[in-house]
Amino acid sequence: MKSMTPTVFIVDDDPAVRDSLALLIMSQGLRTVTFPNAIEFLASYRDGEIGCLVLDIRLPQISGLALQERLQERRLNIPIVFITGHGDVEQCRRAFHSGAIDFLTKPIDQARLISSLRQGIRLSIQQQTQEAETQEVMAKLARISGREREVLERVADGLSSKEIARELDLSPRTIEVHRANLFSKLDVDSLADLIRFYLRALEATGKQRPDEAILNETLPRCN
Image (tube, rainbow, N blue to C red):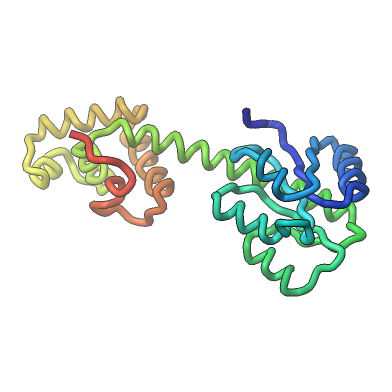
């Protein structure tokens, strides 16, 4: 089961470093889980857990940067604070280029570490909230038929029922039925709410403008 309690995951092969970091972070009221290597972390971590990863650059078997790449490949979004005793400019550049929120050298600046972890946890909460909203939008989109998607697009374009009927070669009464179905299936109470839902659907599917393929690319055609 996913933990909704923010957790700081610490991956470092030095037990003294793991323990000292865990004590520091727990003193700030944050939950910690420690791992001696990337393999054990990957076996334990579940997508959707809220938290931040404190990750040593130099690890046996799988390095910190290699773990960052594997997380990206698996689309596992967790903010990362890198720590190292032997960092260089190229490693720092690669880490930030791949989305790390900080890169700290040992001995660790404790105040900066805690500040970065709190930033990472805030980011993690935002990511999980956005993902939950996206899943909700996609679930609602799956309820509507292909014809209802066509009507939704044209309603969002500002067309009246008569205009939509002419464009789709249907009767205005049929369009009104489809509109009513949209209100019911998408759980909206007003035209403004319907338009807001459509804009959220565009954002969820990564589209910038309405066109014929906006919703059909992500959903199977329904009769």
